[in-house]
Image 1 (cartoon, rainbow, N blue to C red):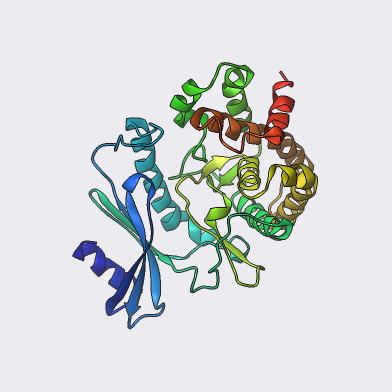
Image 2: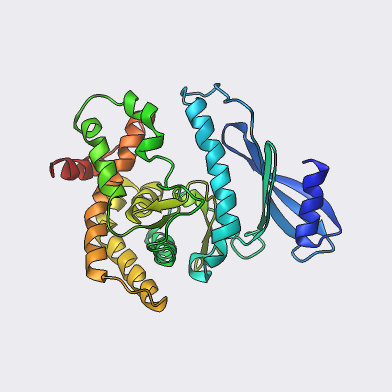
Length: 325
């Protein structure tokens, strides 16, 4: 980290110095790293620094051959979007859709940084790779409150269409798909989601790995907003459930979990005083749940056709969507 950035970290936090730097993880394709920084003479004692170094050109060394000028441009925009999110939007999230507080965002030619609250120290130190029904409901409540907060908001400074897999940014994966009904219907499926009446902001990468849990399992926060933008809330819900539940759990709990999400969404809209035609919103989004699931499976089938998420449950939902034509 260059001295200019170090000085900004100290200024943003009121610290007199840095006492430690601990690598949390490197960013995808070598675009930087996430570092836990210890601070002297400040409250908080630690912050998390998302430090982004943008290469001038794409790194084409990818195990599945997906790095390209297009993917490079997508990553660059994703970090710009995330900076906009933390600077201009994130403070609107309340305790029921908790996100880390942002101390500062910094840009300096090919280097960028986001200085964030350390969620571990704020009471969210637990990470999970799978969830039971209680854990799934906890995250669905987060998503419902997030979607309610930003219902009908134009995504200024964010992705016009949220999620990292939406069709406009994934022509290479579409081209790689085997010929068939799903490939032929890809544009129509994308259109159904993009043209739905009730739009909100979607997290865009709401997998279980991007949720941080309290030790008692009663509270949750979310991170990683590189693909936040406009869209139907079902895109987050479908992607989230597919990230944390088995095929059998999806089959068994689908109805209960969707009903729970909609109960939370209705409650959140009511507590926020947002006026909407609730029955119309629920009917539209319920109808789009299998569409959103199928949309993501379209991406997966082009990206990694032998992925475990392409299972009987996914195929059943896809069949139900494709039979509508």
